[in-house]
Image 1 (cartoon, rainbow, N blue to C red):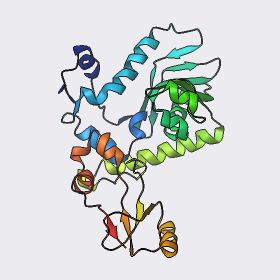
Image 2: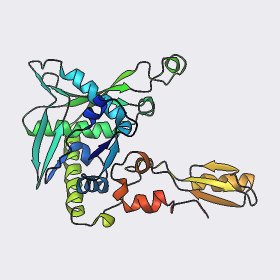
Image 3: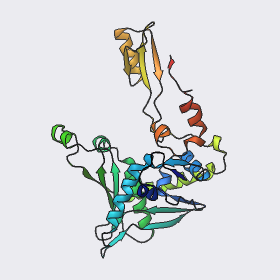
Image 4: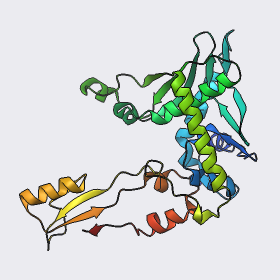
Length: 294
């Protein structure tokens, strides 16, 4: 990966960002598996050409700094800290690094930076999946991992909002806990098997034929349905489904319903491999997925 510094940020930021991005053959990290297969494969194929600016990595670097502080905590008698473990999985190697495992409590702890909105919406499935895999891996090498927790540092927390909003996180550090069952670990193994099967098939395909990331993997905001009137540029009403739009139009009037495709937020702002993706070039950059009347 090529690291740039377009805004002349201090040298320590640049040094922190310039890590080695080495992809080992047949070895996949847990964090890579949580992405769409297309994104994962493109990152590996074009890693030496992907360019990121330090300014786009500020919160990632903040997270790295937090980990550096926590590393100074001495490892206790029952603890594993900042350990990278690797296990064979079929023809591949699964690699993962958690922040802390306590063999007395059987809990994996991971430290993350997050937005308050993630806490408000309870959007924890990606965290749950990642920590479930870590626990699964620990169990494969002889530990009886049974649960996990994320200690989340909220980068946009507001003391004022915490005082006046009922559903707002009260503190800038929140802990989200997970407990896993035997059924969860069985499902995890099935999920990993399916994911590596997808990867094996995708590795044989050229870039433009890789499976398109799902709407969830693209952080798609969801299509909207605008009730329009001829001669008027703005919508009478914008709704979340075609059924709602039809119902509203039958009750309130309008001439047509315009489908406004959801925005692929990850493609636009967070995918490092987007420049090598034909979906991004054709749908996002050129806007071929634009609004249409039905």
